[in-house]
Length: 561
Image (tube, rainbow, N blue to C red):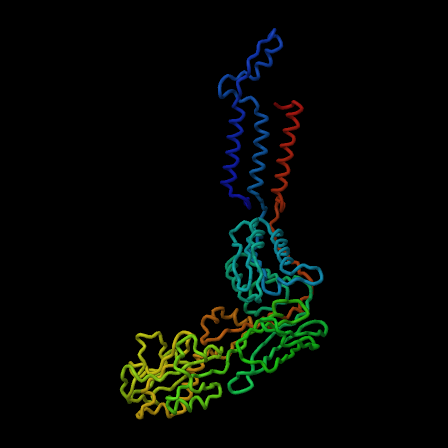
């Protein structure tokens, strides 16, 4: 016998407590009221019953007590939910895996329901088919697998565990779920795995070798279009302007007209184009001549189809504006040549030296303005040392090829600066940390006669990369499908570079829903069936209520006191 409700000890405590309370109630008697009557001839037999004059008296109503105690015992058994099985050797160890990925939570357009709710009902139906001797574990995949019901938990708690599962917009890592299920049933007798999902699943044969795996498909066949790729393609070497290429895939029974709408985050419409797509095909939509201004674009596929989560995407354009540089007339010629050679830089001639003031007229124009200052006062730097890039340098300067001259370096002790170039222990180039103002500090030692750095192409490259870093230019935008995030969930944190990764909402693995046939595969379970019924405790509850009604009826009729 097993108890799927409250523990056996708790049930015994309820029964013992009920027996004690009923006994005390039957022993307690209220003192009778004394009245003056004419004769006691007819009262002698009546006085025998309420004769109690003390707190505890003789136990007189044993039948009533036993009937009420039986009702309490049945109610306690209802809470304990005992189940009996005739043979436990045929019990199974069942692990049910529930797919809670993105495709499960979308509403079916035909009946208004979604596959996730239907899958929950299918799981509970399978749970009710298990006997008390069968072991049950529940695994939810949303998108990573997690154990929500352990093998030692009572079956009655499975419903609460299932109701607490929430869906995800990402696809489920189904192979990882099977691995977790295999760990749970390892070494168990009669192990079985049931996978409840809304699309076909064919795992690696080595993954399910020696395991009784059953896949139960839920829902109806759904056509689906998905955004597979979005990327910014620069039109020039600086990539300040380019095209947005959006690749859309479609899987379904019939050809479908798919429309892509692209808007700026503020609501301005940029693109609205349709294409007739065949099942299993892809189509590239191109939004031409977009500036790399760092704005956010909202992409939307219509009409609504089987999976809504792969129809929307938020894409941020790279930020690559023209960098306006405050040009002082006293700048060395190598620095001026570096400005002229970089088409991303526009020098502001005769820039006033009041750039540190917030009311500088150049800054008030809203330009992406960077100021360059050649430092001629500060710590002295000896010539002949190799220039070494600091860790924060945006470029890839090769050390050992360039030398620093004799001159002044940049004093970073009193200023909140970021070192860029080092010569020994001295800092010869640094930048400001904040955005107001953006300043590039260059020591005069870089332009000394015994310095060869300012006369090499690497100097112009260094100036351009330092200005881009101050100007806020971001690196190439990284795009990856949802499977990349599933395979390596910490990739975003480990990825280097100052860019915002864009996760593509769809792929063939995540978005192909056309393979679902709509049929539901009913599995069989070897149940050790005895006299117990799946709802035996409900029968006991009804029987207890019936006895309680019988006791009240007999009491009214005077059959029992």
